[in-house]
Image (cartoon, rainbow, N blue to C red; front, side, top):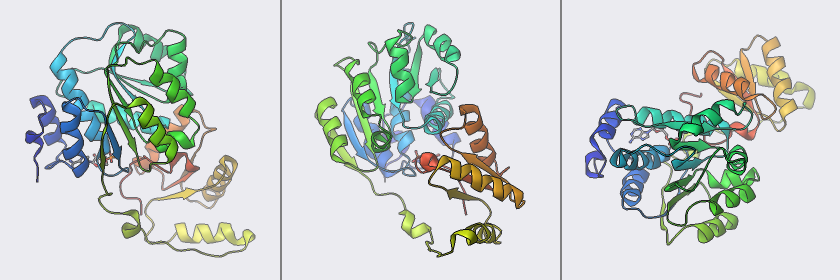
Length: 315
Ligand code: AMP
């Protein structure tokens, strides 16, 4: 088994990893970190929970540490694209955690919030931009962000970005990047549109695939309950009041459904919050933070929260 100090990472990064209490790289980290350091393009088939975020953040930080030069105004030396605002914020948090022993600047570019802060941050230039595709393309087109000095690009959860209809936007963004660059594409699955994206924009990539550390099926008891429509609410309240439910996520098909379920759970005295695409970004962040910090017991969500979000101890 490899150790972190065999992967070619600089001292301040190793210190931060050790502060986090990580003793060994996960399989995807052991494979991706040396490939990224050697400058290869990589296609990684991996899901959340495999440690994939650190697999690309650590070599990015390593490159920024080695270069020791401030980025020019409006540019970023690395760009990370993610499907949802929550995932982008979570990646930025990881960068701050693993980069806390060195100098690194991160700018998060998301839709749904006022652009002023993003414009001011980009005016100075930044080491790493973490972005959702739509707002980033807006900023590129209005000249707020320049991509001509970007050396590394990461596409995280590429298949979810495809599902959300971001593929044309991603292709436009990739077309604006320098030809000489390093690209890493991560995806849980490999539908043919993602394969085509890799063929069009990656240069002879190494391909790696890791099994999730433990497949969900092994850790989740699944059951189906048949109930009449007018008994669904009582059934749900009954389940959520069960003694082994400490924290739970309830998924609904529609945004309105999420609000309605959340409302009747509140009325039934069960502390819950709803998250979906019609909520403002500050609302979404507050709801997720309250659930993460165990202030609310139930998160009611549309499939916006179905993937990529890492929350411990959901019973
Ligand atoms: P991810 O797959 O990137 O969402 O990461 C899943 C979780 O694994 C996160 O909570 C990380 O903090 C944690 N993690 C990442 N790398 C390691 C490691 N080498 N050892 C222990 N935990 C890790």
